[in-house]
Image (cartoon, rainbow, N blue to C red; front, side, top):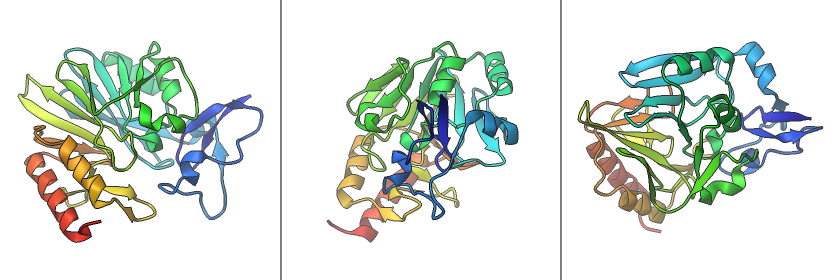
Length: 270
């Protein structure tokens, strides 16, 4: 019995004798099955050809990304807070070196993930860090391909994880799409970790919102208005996105607001 992993999205499945026929995450119209068909791999195979790089962004914030790139290629964040340490979003490769380094930095106390494309090997990560709880929005529960008693499904528009750390469900890309909001009292700074729910664009001066990035399907006006309303009144100076060095270091609240206005102007009414 093997926990097969989709080669395209990097999500690990329940253990089976043979690979599943399809990956429901990739056959969904927000993702894709490659033109040459569904392919599978395993975590052990990925360990043979890839390694993780852990980089310090600033005090208390580290990024983790896999090289050479694998699957979707997102990065995860290791965030140290006064209440504990969070793994924000997840990547497929987890190995002894990664676990050793993160344990040296204090270990992982909780895992939170923005949406199903980044569920990856979340169960393996949880097991590696003393069965750390994995917080997922309940609206996306059908996309969980490997069950675990460590998964905590939360509901509603927001969840206060710890003091100064909150999960927010703006929706959009997925019904349960989630961002992480953190206030660091030592720096007196508000940060937003967004995956590609609020996607930091290459100019580092704008953000975007999509139903499907690879298939170029926009969100409706209604969806954008929901995102705008659920983020209303929430302060943040910085945005840390899903991709390598996609960080906006200042004026992020204003950038978010003007990007919303730009989208609504271009798309128009429903």
